Amino acid sequence: MKTLGKVLGVIVVCLVLLLPVLRITGFEPHGPTPGLWLKGDLVTTPVADWSFTDKYPNIEVQTNTWYLLPHSVTTFCIAYNGQLYLASYYYRPGIEYPHGRTWNEYVARDPHVRLKIGKQLYDRTLSYVTDPAEKAGFLQALAKKYPQPKMPESSRVIVFHVLDN
Image 1: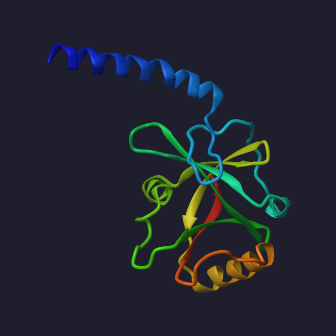
Image 2: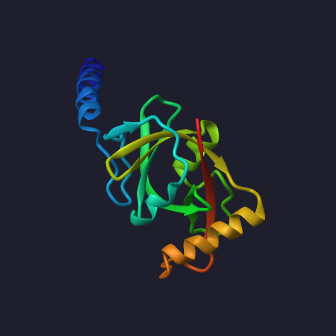
């Protein structure tokens, strides 16, 4: 029992020492692998037209977890009518929002996120889109930006509207 306590103590100390290093370096997501903090230059001014995001195939989203460490992922972004929208794909049938995607669960609990577009960071709020007309317009813009879908037909797209804080 003493040995187990020592091993657990060493693990806790290592984690406590590792967190400041990860905070400094960021440990951002890479492709499908999630990360922690996003690093970049924070933009605090409102954005009137998000069409500049058309040149970015993917952006990164940092959510707030219940255990106080950030969770960041890479996702698709679409500018539609000057507004910014994010896509989250559900590939397996039968799974309903927000379940099945960890970052969606965190957004449902706390919609405040940090977006990384290029080297710029934006603190914003996400709103889950339920309006069929708004979602249809988004899907049309999505098809223009990403004309070669590589998703199974059974997949569904969850849409988030990016709002100013």
